[in-house]
Amino acid sequence: MSGDVIIAEIEKNARDVLRVTLGQYRGYDIVGCRVWAQGDDGPVPTRAGFAIQPNKLDALIEALQMARAEGVAIGWLPDVPA
Image 1 (cartoon, rainbow, N blue to C red):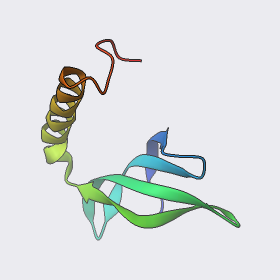
Image 2 (image 1 turned 135 degrees about the vertical axis):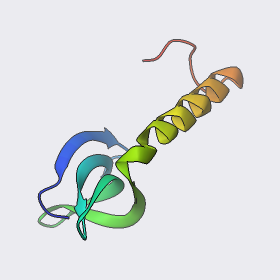
Image 3 (image 1 turned 30 degrees about the vertical axis):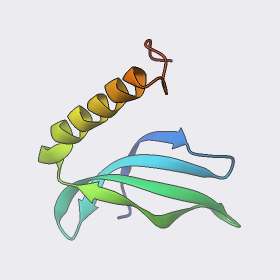
């Protein structure tokens, strides 16, 4: 998946980041969400992650918004986004 466009990197912990990308795999357009770990020669992708078709992105965003709302409801998250 070389040539991916990095959309965002979200710190997971002191060594790892969650990288959101747009790219292609075997001729298919994909949205990738993968954990990258710090290796000896820089960041390397791990097996942790997933790729979805772009037409599924709205459903993923909706699911994440529902998870956030539930996190607020049970007190895990503040009512106002950081």
